[in-house]
Image 1 (cartoon, rainbow, N blue to C red):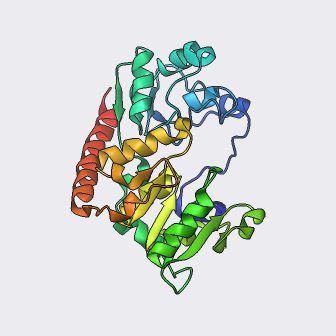
Image 2: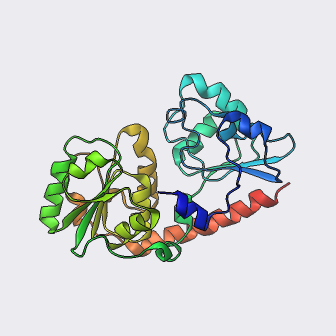
Length: 288
């Protein structure tokens, strides 16, 4: 999915860093070291605290910052609190994409902590549209992007598609998922995924980033709030943009279909947040 996209669009070092020791044995030479971003500090997904994700390999005296880093959960586990505090105390500036991340840092006694937008939202829809190509299907469709197993989701999608008279198109990352209802987009590349969101008449998802891209492309959407440890950042984004009415927690809630989105307000929020983030990022780079 990502290899070709990264090769074409990113300036990546030829050296691969696979083990923790690689970062200490082959430390890149730089003036500023930056951690980013999505769930990079999530000890549940990482099966522990990974020191190199906290820039533990960086030589003393070098500036350490984080750019929209994420814990991916509301609270730290007791066993990791002291270690995370020790590691983050070495940072000059910390920025998180979620209010919960800022709260975690404040609970550790850290002061230079700010919330900024998710990096995908710092780029406007005009930037992302250059990756958009053809429609996945000719008919008007409901795009489904589902990360978590949710009892009742399939029946909910069927009812939504019936009410809106839309064909179901489903993003599938496993071969067994093609058996589910809807036209399957099997392991889509970045451009195919963005195209699927861009041309959709409605998006239903429990993914933070698909929610984010839906708002950036100004698409009607419904956010299914998953288990609490993963739902906080979706609520954060919807609260920021005044879109909480587009979220559901139960599969008998069809109220988002009657909610009209004020896209001008959403775009004003994003424009302000982008300017604020740019100014703060410049400050992080320039401060001694």
